[in-house]
Length: 101
Image (cartoon, rainbow, N blue to C red; front, side, top):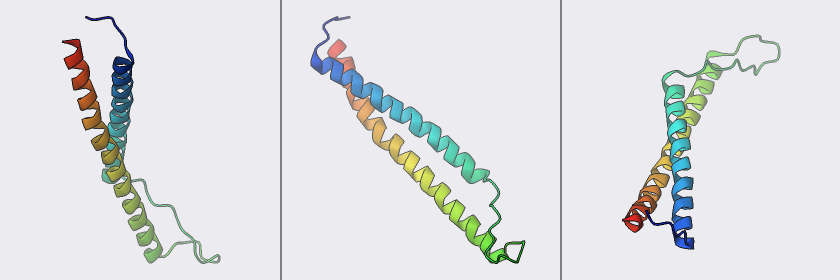
């Protein structure tokens, strides 16, 4: 193994490390988002009428749709983080492996 640490090699390792961390965080967020979609938390009670103590069916349905929308957006965002970081990581790691050989 070569032991000359030039700027290029340090750069490659730093980018590989940063993108690897992005992949890990993205993967954790994907799993969390899938769990939230499959097993969502119950919607909070929404009171529009200060006199009423119960939310109407329409209000509860709207709240459930809103929560589902944000859970799906969270999943897409997490997949985007993972999807962007993966090829960048693979490219830099491949460069590191070629320079080591």
